[in-house]
Amino acid sequence: MTPSIATPRQPNRQWIKRHRWPTRLWHWTNAVAMLIMLMSGLMIFNAHPRLYWGDYGANSDKAWLQIGSRGDKGLLVLGKERFETTGVLGLWTDARGIERRRAFPGWATIPTSYSLADARIWHFFFAWVLVGSALLFFAASIVNGHFRTDLLPRRRELGPKHIWSDIVAHAKLRFPAGEAAKHYGILQKAAYLSVIVLLLPLIVLTGLTMSPAMNAAWPWLLDLFGGRQSARSIHFLCAAGLVLFFVIHIAMVFLAGPINEVRSMITGWYRLPEDKA
Image (cartoon, rainbow, N blue to C red; front, side):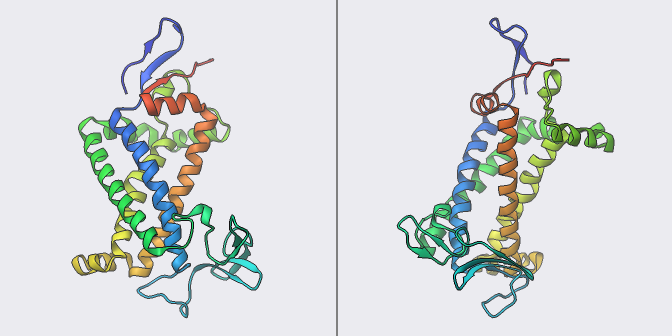
């Protein structure tokens, strides 16, 4: 981030260069890649809508999660708990009024009609886009100091009192203004770092673990994640974590001021909210 400047038309409203171009490029590339990978991944999941722990998993094995139907009901089974999901998951009606018995509906998948082969093509192509853009982003962020200056928490930010005050401020929808708005809060840093250094690496490594070719080249991946089916379950949970991050992220953007937030991620320039105090 660069020092703030006051514009002639708005002398009391300062602007800062909030996002460097590598961050903005990676943000939008990542958004597109992750959306397509999520939707194609749901189609891949439709081929066998059950998750297991361990090395093996088939219809006769005990699944910790499954989505399907029984009779005239769609069902989500999580452990011993059953939830009826008719019309949403397991049993739903497509745009032509035809009843379908698949885990996820066509509007949520790529392609919209069942095709495991096409879904894998979409998924693997954008997996390479995701990995390539992430590597370039990491390299640029190390060189330009983005990680060090913007994302790594300072020692004072890790204090329980500081963390709690940030939690309370978010709960009351009190967003930083003035000088405080020039920097990410501790909750923002924690959320971004959890995606960058935890969820994305995990989702890539577990994806590789599910590949027979990678099992032959890097058999240690199977030991690391406790088997191919465990890797598939972790892969699914990481995807769910990314969806949760996306929902919260979009909600915060709208609550904090969508025009200012989106503009800063397109142009880099961010107008500091006025400190009313």
